[in-house]
Image 1: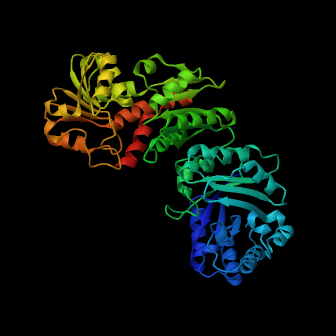
Image 2: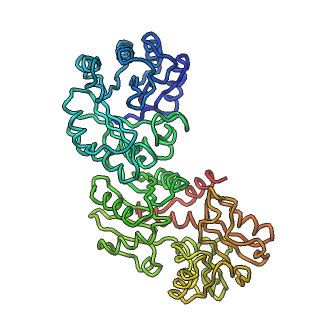
Image 3: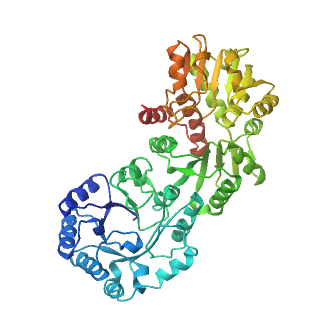
Length: 514
């Protein structure tokens, strides 16, 4: 069993039992009592709070972290060790002690470890970055007799999280390990701990109450990342982009997995923009077949990187994605073959036609303006020209608009030409107006007219400034939620092989947006 462990850090001893009870109500399976957060902790206080937590009937870890390893204990080492001993006497199932402390002069931790090895979590923490040689560190912990080994370190980028997963991958039968990369980049290690058989993964009771950077709440782990359903056979999917913290894709896809009973989990992967970072992360995933990565959604700024990766690594490219020149979906089959698709194309066209109650053929001859010449702009240019629209592409960098226009036989112009806009359909294919910059619009208000159809591909927020201003003048508006659900449904089917529950996907998205 991998325990979802709530970190309890209260200052007032009298609040310990209530906090532990809240953790149990939210679904925690173990409690870590951070004794070093108590106001002026002493032996008697420690006994009292550990016994109080025992009323909840969940296993307890008593942690009194030294300040030299990121903790808050204000007194001497001998007093700290006395508190740890008091926690054991009070019935704590485990105590956490630091590997580094065993070699400190006049420190009784080694004696404590010798007496209570079957109840000791022997830990190593690095809040500055990834240790130079994690396998050697793991072996150093192994050489000490303890119940559970623990390695935690700060991850500067997402690829740093692979080392934490590898610690679990190296575990032998009967070994119990905790291995976590801290920070946003380390989320993969926290969620996949259960798939890989870790002893536990930590979570906070509330946002802002984290004991280490990157902790989710207990509720997020269970409700968003499907903790209760994860097992060794869980398929891994996710969304890859930069930035990515705003993405609602994890909530949408994980809810859809639950709805259809698919054994999968969908995670956010923030990968830095340069090609070498993208390539390195995908190489790392592919080298670890035991992660069971099934598929990835690819968003800004990596859609062209995904296309290049497919081409350079013998993947199979959907012809439409090749025509668009951008890949927003990567899929691996059971034999490790890699496929690249683009679901933006159909998702955008269906959003327009469904909202207007028309068929794709009804768009033929309609003058359309696309603002933006990036990945989404390419998909829209391919789609709208394919159905016969007369397209003009507007972009800040005119040369980029010109290059895209030449590929799809369109007209082009710079953003300074938007004042002379002559179109029936206007599409925002940029990030302008996306959360958190919600007070921006890609189109000057003076350009909006009642007879326009205005489609904003931004879905967060659903009613962007552009759409609000367009509605104010009586224009027809199409929001990005429809496009998001359509393209996500296409990805879901590619990942799972099942029909997407579109109604659930839209309901989850709207719940988070409105």
